[in-house]
Picture 1 (cartoon, helix red, strand yellow):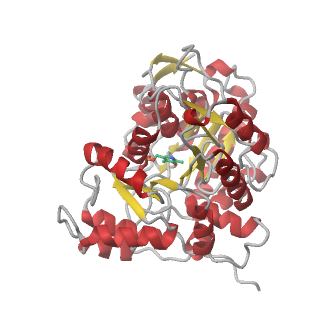
Picture 2: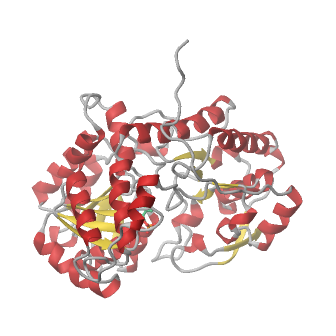
Amino acid sequence: MNLPFSESYKIKMVEPIRRSTREQREQWIKDARFNLFNLRSDQVFIDLLTDSGTGAMSQMQWSEMMLGDESYAGASSYYKLKNAIAEITGFPYFLPTHQGRAAENVLFSTMIKAGDIVPGNSHFDTTKGHIEFRKAHAVDCTIDEAFNTTLDHPFKGDVDLNKLEGVLKSYPVSQIPLIIMTVTCNSSGGQPVSMKNLRDVKQLANQYDIPVFFDSARFAENAYFIKIREEGYGDKSIREIVREMFSYADGMTMSSKKDAIVNMGGFIGFNSKALFNQATTYNILFEGYISYGGMSGRDMNALAQGLYEGTEFDYLETRIKQVAYLGQQLKDYGIPIQYPFGGHAIFVDAKRFLPQLPKEGYVAQTLAVELYIEGGVRGVEIGTLLADRDPETGLNRYPDLELLRLAIPRRVYTNNHMDYVAASLMNVYDRRHEIMSGLKVTREAPILRHFTVELEKA
Ligand SMILES: *Cc1c(COP(=O)(O)O)cnc(C)c1O
């Protein structure tokens, strides 16, 4: 018999989770104004809200916590992190920040001014928020294939070079401070960007003398997909692939809460000393002195260790196969999901799941609420709520995709938990025809509204 695939770690510490009744959940979600961010974690049985900061640290990371150097300046933890970043990404300069959006805040304060154009592949919500907050514009140049959930394209995070060139030709270079490549592309379904596309984008950017920055939260998962799917990379190590990826960037922002498997943290990496110097002022202003920037010494230690562990093939294979394990069950049941399976999450196509609902009814949010009521499983809407209103017209933006994202925390749940999630969603699918009305908004914030929005049944 062939030996089956099995996880590359065992469990040393456990955390209890609680079941609840359907009646309890119906009351709780009503009290939470149909916003799953408002639920208390003990009202959730399996929490797939996000894979951000929700991973389990390893014994090595916990032991690094004990070695943290909390000196204000020049801490050994800072140098440990600096070395890890230089070794893994190749960037010689870096600034620590408290999380990914803080890295965006510091970098964009340095680079972006009102009226600027920032092309990229489906910018992440906080990235877009930080661009639009500065009265600049994020222009999405992702390939059209990304918006067809049934199409099995290996690199749906790729940028369409014609679209990108169109943007670069339409504006003066002085108005395009940078191009942002998101690896993997979260907003279009955790889909990877090919090495070829990263190389081509950099080449095109060089012609116009525009820097390329990677929004790198899931760079290691992206590297895994390059290894598995792109010709010529099968025999390369994840670290070799990662180094080549970053060789096509002038810098990076990082949410360490994702592929570096820590609960909090971020950083910016740079090639340019001049840019690093400029950004330093904002880092000190917003985040803290440059040798800690919003992080404790112990957290920088755990992050340095996490960067090494997060770029190991066995770990990545365990993770991505678990995501695919859930995806395969949903696929076998005929539930409309995005193909191919993403790196960190399975994305359910809510428009095809609930075609009877009008687009004004917040279709993916409605599905997220139904899944919670069914099994106490918390996913998240990647749809109209997340897309926010157009800052100029004030009208709802209806994105091409209305997705329910089931993001899987790293090294946290077993495949039994995945079976439970799949069964919960199958039960909703069986009664999908009974879901006749969506939701409507009763209160919302002007930007990043999905976190605090309040809704009621339409
Ligand atoms: C999570 C994430 C961010 C923001 O990082 P935080 O640590 O949540 O502030 C930015 N970009 C991408 C692609 C992300 O996934």
